[in-house]
Amino acid sequence: MIEIVVNLIRILFGFLITMFLPGFAISLVLLRWGGINFTKRLALSSIFSITITVLVALFLDVFLGFNINFANMVLVLSSITTISIIIWFIKSGNFKKMSKILKKVKR
Image (cartoon, rainbow, N blue to C red; front, top):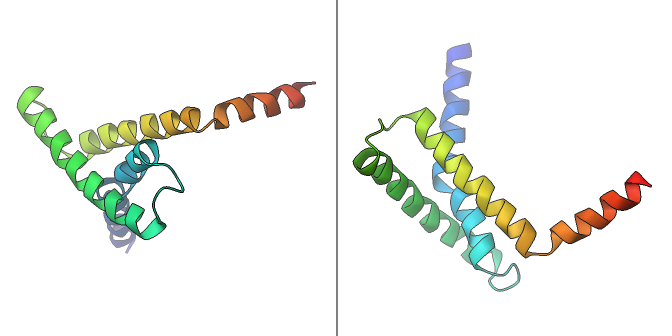
């Protein structure tokens, strides 16, 4: 029973990390938030994610010679997603707002 639940969580997480999250983070960096509607952003997120996943798998296998497994793919795709969100956060001006808030809290 526990094995089934763990497998379902793994499938859900794998689907999100390969089919949605990296592309959504990249779309935040490349496209303004109000520039396109949410439906188009979801569609582009799926396309970006599939493209990024394939390119990462090819890069890991062909150029670096790593085995393609769950852990390697999650590590690289999570890194791409995190870096993209940090870039978006800084680019959108939220970093300056957060700095001001933290300075007020420290006083």
